[in-house]
Length: 324
Ligand code: SF4
Image (cartoon, rainbow, N blue to C red; front, top):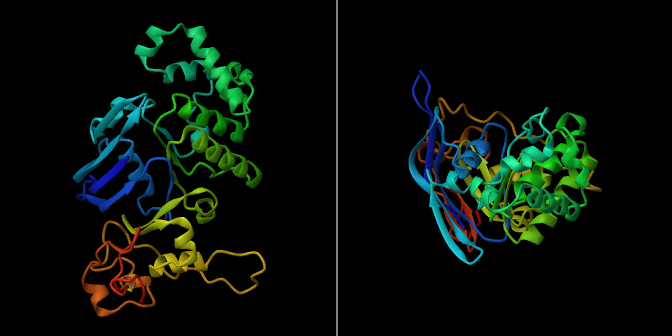
């Protein structure tokens, strides 16, 4: 469905390019919820922007590409980087970070729904029919059709987030990208949003890509996940396998730091900070924080490779069977 083919991107700055995505190469399948996890600043949002083809200066694609392909209403489609935006809303849609703030506060929601419908569809179908379909869709999602008359400033943060998700999924896109969909919401609303995303994915049988720094979000809703560190995917596999047997030292430390019910042991954070992307260390970028780092780690970049069927990781110390 989405093939990320050796993608590298950078931001142009007056001091030269800052490389934010480094040779990222993996696939996201049909009918799955795929999570992208990692600390702030590791490149998650930039990768999601590249997936949605928001490649605008100063963001530049240095090499590689993305291919979005699949089938909708019996018609096959395939779009590459630079073409994907032609199919926004129809085959792919995006719930941006701080989505509650992206709705225009002084435009009623019904106009914002109408704006998202491609012009060709609006020429074919009267406005009233479209709005009736939107109202029915909101009801399907257990939301009141009266929402359409509301202005965003009249709604709570959680309700605005639900409205944005409804907007992003109304055209039944094959892929929905969501950037930190639960950030800045209280835990009860967060749970409601996660349930809504899971229900929608089951109903649409599409692909959802969820970016979140909250590893608990991935545990709750994703089928597979990729862990990012300093612009690269360093581990990828089925979510349950990653939680059960994390392979990369960074993933082990991330998961080891999670609180668990009944576990009263002291949790240790990951020492140090992620490297500055303007001046990353040579070799493995996790080496300055890794308790297992060797000379080899400090000198050469570990290859991202399949260490078990469907399990990928980038670490020199992993043998072919994925064990130390
Ligand atoms: Fe640690 Fe070396 Fe593996 Fe990097 S390659 S994660 S430094 S053991």
